[in-house]
Amino acid sequence: MKKLIRSLTILFGLKQSQRYFPEEKQVCVFKKRPILYRGFAPNTVQDSINELQKHLQEQGFLTNVSGKFDLETEEAVKEFQKKNNLRVDGVVGPLSWACIFYPKLYRSQKAITPESQDAVKELQIILHEEGFLQKEPNGYFTRETERAVKRFQKTYGLRDDGLVGAATWAVLLGMRQEVDKSFPQLVYFISPQSWFLWEQFLMISFIILGIYYSPIPGSAPKLSTALATAYGLTYIVPCLLEYLPVKQPQQPKLPLLQYAPYVLTGIFWKPIINFLGTLFN
Image (cartoon, rainbow, N blue to C red):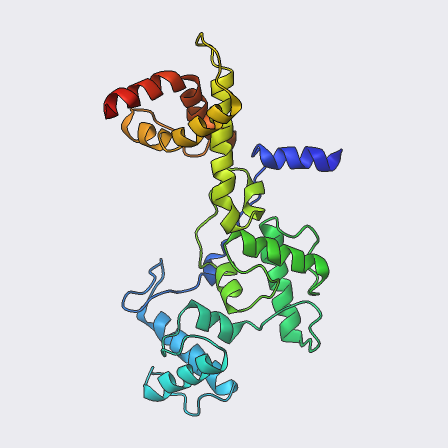
């Protein structure tokens, strides 16, 4: 019973989990223009270069720490990228930063170091804060942690293999947009490939609902005709919403209400079809 109530709560968007965006760990993505924030100073970039060179030296890729992003540093970055199957361009972007600072994590990992355990705990904290992991963080990559990682990866369009590599770390630490909360979170666990079909199914369902429960006098069409009509009308509604002076709420309290225009389209399906017929004739 509790699971049923919880599922209905998620479906109708009555409960939204908090999103975790630690400002101090936002991944920097820049080439010519840095990310600006209050307290930014030129030495911020210098500190990043020093930190980069220090880690490259500790991992055996760099010999001399000069404090400048010189040719030797660039070659060290390229060597690091090549070894870690990253794009070898000498540019330290989000994936390179994530790979430098965070280890690859997965369940049944044999070599567990204190650094890896700390990384697992940080991973669990993010997943727990965002509602993907129910149990408190403990630093152990359990089966439940793996399932939480897979749900996170599905949500943000990553390969859901449960392996926390550079790409997953980069997204975890900020290289993403906040998930649109205007629709139930249940759909976030659907694979990105299935999302379009799911949305199309909802559109057609609400149009058919309007067709068969229309208060306008007249007999309803056969189911096959209704399905074909509803499928065609799914391409009409976006155009109507664009040109009609109808203001839609960005985040409705009940997300399914955003499909109300499709119900109205189903109710007035006959006048719409007649109008389109006259227009093209």
